[in-house]
Length: 344
Image (cartoon, rainbow, N blue to C red; front, side, top):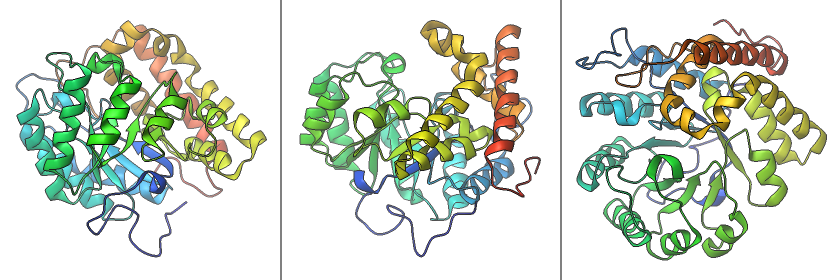
């Protein structure tokens, strides 16, 4: 399914940042394709730019509503600044304004993050996926001020909060969202995995922040907040976006039966990895490697090796990842529109 648009996508042109209401559909989270040897600590120029551009273009043509680059799957913390710049230019250039694109800009500290945010802003990206500096855990006062300063310094960028409590050692409580709503007006979305206080988060942000869940839990979010669950993200899009798009489309149509089937299909494909997804300690150490291994097995793109030092993956985890990729390939064959070439 090729994206058909009469004009620029929301948030891809002009000066106003993309709003919560304009974030809809399935946002594909991409790996950062790597060249051979990228798993060495002293590797330089590791980005496979041709494959990165091809993947982004293919995702847009196959129906992704938006692109998210340089998250955990995109190996944001493992990239040199030179490679970071190459990825930003390649991804934004390949999207070419057809859909919104959010680029991860999280650094080790505030000044490093600001440097990355400036690069993302100058590239013309829709916004930045922004987590917290990872050296010292932040308090709520620190975290709110961090986003307030980013919002003030880069008013042209929509900010998507990378609300990963495990990675950033911060729980993103309701008081954080209340503070961000009051002090960081360019925060219009958040990438979330679980939100036990979703209803309160929606209340204190007054509909100005779109809390975007993964394709694995969006069905549950929609049951709790049907009017505000308008989008999902999917690292699985790197294996092919059709199953995740089918689920989001069914939820948007209000087709309960189709949504339940699509959610069950995705759960079946992910079943070989379910025990690893559920073990937060294991997944914390092998997140990137598992994603790249299953993406490679699915055959939709060539992600290349994981970058040092995150390139170790026990054989049993690699086998489970490969099984997931094979199931996803099979699911795509059942989900994709007739005539799609799954091997291209």
